[in-house]
Length: 330
Ligand code: ADP
Ligand code: TRP
Image 1: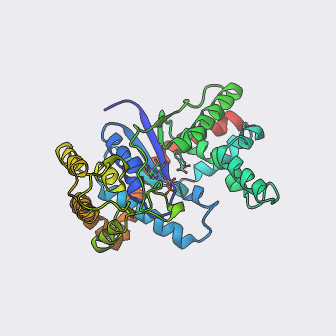
Image 2: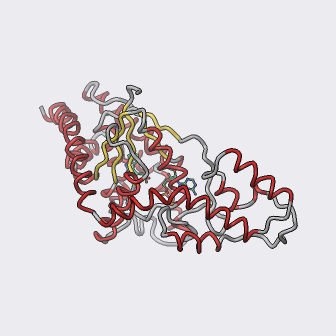
Image 3: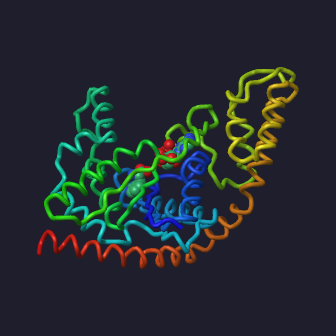
């Protein structure tokens, strides 16, 4: 057990897919085995994109059920919903006052929105709400509220963690040592998981395989993976094949070497390779999928887990927030 506190947030903006599983969920569950970990569902962060409460609620349950079904160790990990802890909104308001506006102007996500508008000849800030603009301040509040040392995130979120560190520094400089400075941890390179069309698997490309799709849908999706037109007898390059790239993350070393050899030798058609891939993924995911389905049919069990998590998180949040309040307002 390490003495570091790990924290990460997952936005409930879509149904998690195999790319999220390999790149984010699986490594997080591993980390939670040996570290005190806070994992929360960032529903306040979803608000700048989704304005339908039903969708946010549905994705929140899905993420909670997925983490529990995959075996997140709830003895080390506190699993909760961001909005259940009011102190995060309060801290965000406080942090606004030590955060330079210029820092927000530099955020990649905000800059991307500006560039898109410029390319479209639209007003620079068209479609940008203040939730998007101040997103990094709320994220800093998430991170600083729980005394976080390490924040495992995808590369796209590194800048946000660096901002949290900067904001903690500004605060400490004015009000004295109050916050620990967090560090981003960019996961070991699991590589980019390709989707059905060979591009990065992403909900924005509509090319995903949902992590816990029912067996029949999983099979259908896998059979729809786009391949080139090589005949079964021809040798194939496994490193250029979406089928093999997915297989690598579910099979053991011997199985991977075996499938690699069969690709390179020729004689294995893509249809058969897809069947092998389906059998493998299905065998790894079928037990957790059953547990996932059970939990999604018993959301009161998820409510209880999230309420217990919130009670635990709140105890920490209250202490931190009291210190901030007294540092700033006496
Ligand atoms: P999406 O691209 O579907 O919107 P997100 O940006 O919400 O996915 O991803 C959340 C996290 O899941 C990312 O920070 C990253 O770590 C991981 N992830 C997403 N897609 C992939 C992928 N195709 N390959 C590997 N990891 C991925
Ligand atoms: N911004 C993160 C994302 O888009 C989600 C998130 C919100 C987060 N708060 C966080 C991640 C705090 C790490 C720490 O994926």
